[in-house]
Every structure is written in structure tokens, then in C-alpha cells.
Image 1: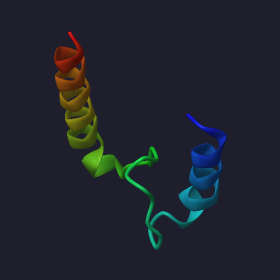
Image 2: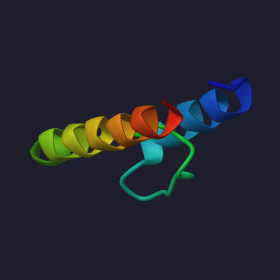
Image 3: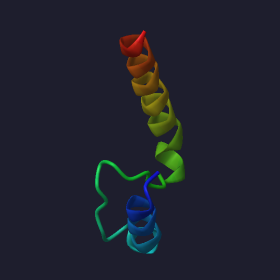
Length: 53
């Protein structure tokens, strides 16, 4: 992860509930959404890997 995006994450995580992050930044998900978010990420990574093959 580029240092610039890591710094943006570091600055925004404490403000996440009120703030917004770029779609290029990993964000923390609330517990009730975590499984759905995890499954979504796994699906997208699987599609990306398949497309690369």
C-alpha cells in the first residue's frame, strides 16, 4: 500500500463514522457488516485472480 494511502487511512480511521474514505483505501467495517464485507472482498479478489489467469 502506498505511504500516501496509509497516511490517509491513519488520519481517517478515527473519524470513519463521520468521514469518508477513498475507494482505494482499506477501511474498518462495523461488526454486523464484517462477514458481508469479507465475503464481498473474497468474491472480488477471486474474480480478479480469474481475470488475470
